[in-house]
Image 1 (spheres, rainbow, N blue to C red):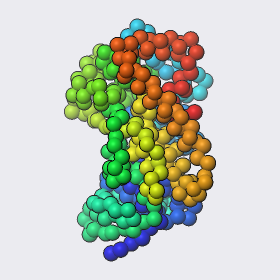
Image 2: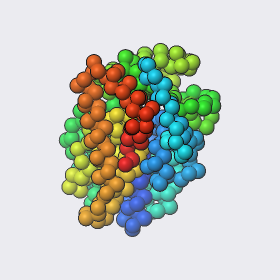
Image 3: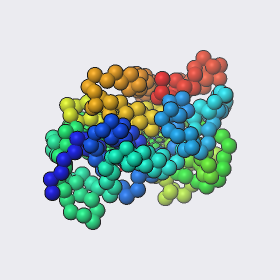
Image 4: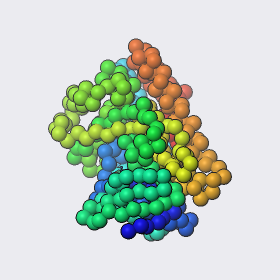
Length: 344
Ligand SMILES: Cc1cc2nc3c(=O)[nH]c(=O)nc-3n(C[C@H](O)[C@H](O)[C@H](O)COP(=O)(O)OP(=O)(O)OC[C@H]3O[C@@H](n4cnc5c(N)ncnc54)[C@H](O)[C@@H]3O)c2cc1C
């Protein structure tokens, strides 16, 4: 059966859902395909930066908000305090379900358990579990299919800048949100403790070029034990964070979120970049002259974070010192914690 749509979006993460919803709200015919059976679940700490994201997600989705951030280095513990939460936590499952509801309400055809078997310039072969294959023709293709993007590979774009995140959810209610910057353990990455409503996300982020998954996992386990968390190694989940940004538009093929490499190389923050780029790409498809100022701001922040990561990689022996200086600047309020966020 040959079918047609204006826009095919591959991947129902925050980037694909945001893009598809806005397009459909403006009257475009959109098909969104997701290989998983359920939209939402993703290896993620669920931390969202308040300044940028509260404009994009419903306040009902917030599990916990943290006006205090604890930054721990080898020599210092700094507490940054503001009136409003600086970072909040959400459940990725609830965010995905909430966004999927909006997409369906806008008229997006959402196909779960659907894989893209083959891609050509204007058509894709799709297979939905338990159903026959179908060929779908489209005018525009949006790759919102995450860090290991098939659409990015189809475009022939290399990916050389990649972070690795390891996450584990433990039951319990914890009070403090903590960032542990220890170069000997995580290079210029960090270990985190992000409390959710009834559980806590414990994890570590590092650059795959400097730390293998095996080494990062061992270090996460030993660091977590020192923090008083006993982690079953089998419950640790890994995910890649692509921060090799090379643009969003490639003729009529578009990339958003992790597929575009828009996550922060410094912190791994990628939910906000996915939402902003998804919406910006939708606007550009609808009107090529759309100003996309929020996307430009995001790209500026992305470059800044990437430059910091590049500097840390080149000056590795001084990395510990740089992190101590960072903590001092935060303590003295010379550096705003929000500089580390992807929102401007
Ligand atoms: C351990 C870890 C912790 C993290 N913590 C945070 C955090 O606290 N805060 C934050 O902001 N970011 C965090 N991130 C990053 C964040 O998860 C991502 O940047 C964000 O999910 C990117 O959204 P996206 O829509 O671009 O892609 P994704 O959320 O990855 O969505 C892509 C979707 O595409 C689907 N898909 C892929 N290929 C296909 C295909 N061929 N056909 C159909 N469907 C396909 C996938 O199943 C998936 O649902 C973390 C990442 C990791 C690994």
